[in-house]
Image (tube, rainbow, N blue to C red; front, side, top):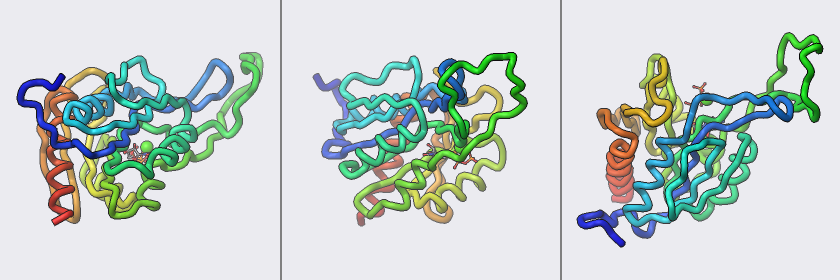
Length: 226
Ligand code: CTP
Ligand code: CA
C-alpha cells in the first residue's frame, strides 16, 4: 500500500546501490575491514523503493537489515562487490556508491589460522579495484552516477577530485572524522556537481538525508536531460 502523499517520482528508475563495508580475509578467522554499517545506503534504498524505483542493493557484511522489496546481493570482499556491480550495472538508470570499500586486501590469504607463535611483523597488501571508478570509466549518458566521499579534512577539495576523476554526475561529501558518519546516528551531507555546483543538505537522520539526496539527484538528472 502506498502511504498518503508519497511521491512516485522514481517510478521507472532502476537504482543500483552499493552499501556497507567489505571484508578482506587474512586467514579463516581474521580480516581487514572498516567501521561502515551500510546504514546510509540502506536508507537510500528504502527511500527509493518508497518513491517507486526498482532497487538492486549490493551489500557488504553488516548486521543492518536491507529494506523489504529490494533485490539484495550479499558480498564479502571488494572483488565480489565489483563482480556483482558489473553484472547489475547494465540495467541501472541511476547508480549510487555508498559502500566503504576496503582500499587494500592482504596479498596472501592463509588457508589455515595463522598461529601466534609465527613471527608476523607486517601484512603485505594489494590495492583493490575501484568499483565506482570502473563504473565511471565504462558509463554512458544513460546512467546517472553518484558517489560518496568519506573525508576527514579538506572535504570539498578531495570530493571534487573524486567527482571529476571517477566521472561522476554528483558526489555527496560525508565528514567521517572521529566517530562521525558511522552507524545509526545523524549524518550531515553536502552535494557537489559540475565545476562549482554545491548544495548543503544540512544534517538529520540518514533517512531524512536520503530523501534530500534523492531530491537533489532528480533535480540534477532532469537539468542534464534539458
Ligand atoms: N569506492 C569504490 N571502490 C573502491 C573505493 C571507493 O567504489 N575501491 C567508492 C566509494 O563507494 C565512494 C567513492 O568511491 O562512493 C569514494 O570513496 P572514498 O573511500 O571516499 O575515496 P577513495 O577514492 O577510495 O580515496 P581515499 O580513500 O584515498 O580518500
Ligand atoms: Ca577509500
